[in-house]
Length: 250
Image (cartoon, rainbow, N blue to C red):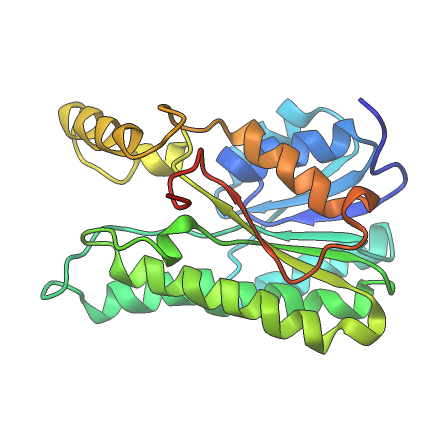
């Protein structure tokens, strides 16, 4: 590795699996010290073990503001600052219009929108000028996908935040960018459907819509996150970087 993040302190929410875990591993390999969060302690412990060094796991749910306070109190105590924030935690479930429940709406917006807002806002006192904030959005924000409208709307909000916060933070030279994955092979994707046959059908449908003809790997998102976190992207802010095999580009 090239040590692009040498000496940096990073926070990755939802760092216990999938894209978050892959990114935390890349950040550490590039020289950063990383704090990861996850809701399930056992998964968090396994992720910390897998990353191996320069990592602290803090159990918590981003939609719970007290959990966020505890996360940042830990970071402040151990490292005193945050140079890189990857607001990655998120999730979604299928619910077609006509079957959207209040519980479905609240859960999705609480994690993907409210959780993301306060993940960023509560990090700001610990961020030196010139830091980097990366928001995990999704191509779902601009592709009409069946039964996924609430999730897609939350990700459109994330894209909007990247624009507004770029302006809000410009005097501090804190860069804010959105990273929009296409279909990525993760535990979260596998959890979207009930049976193996449904999963096979779901994935083959997605692959058919991707010009590169395959699902993405979490590490491919992690590499893009390293770019946005590092000085390689020093003149890049307010963008949406698509890592989607071309799915939303055609």
